Amino acid sequence: MTVEKSLRVCGKGHKFYKSSECLSCPICDKENKPESGFLSKLSSPARNALVHEGVNTLQELSRFTEKEILKIHGIGPASLPTMRTSLEEEGLSFKE
Image (cartoon, rainbow, N blue to C red; front, side, top):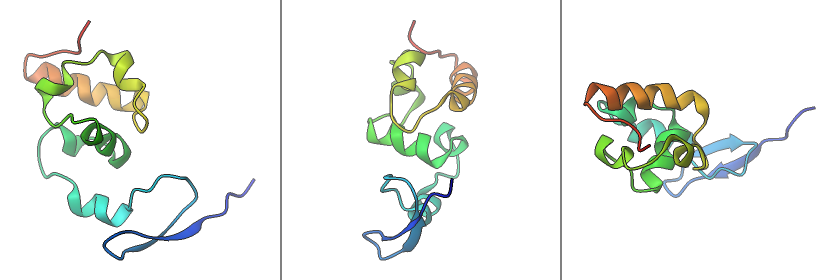
């Protein structure tokens, strides 16, 4: 089954093709990727989902349970080990 991709243009004028309904521009995502911190270790969809939810720090992330994090669109189970490790490095953990 082949999924048809459509041409999109973001607010900055970048042109790209996507097959999903996701509005995220891959070019903007690369430009906005942090160079350090836990967000820099995550995929663009997971990073964008957390930022959209107002989670920019590990302290903010620690206020959520793993189950709550997985309910956020854009975050999958593959992101959890990275988040867990980042939290543990700072002496934090997900909410129980």
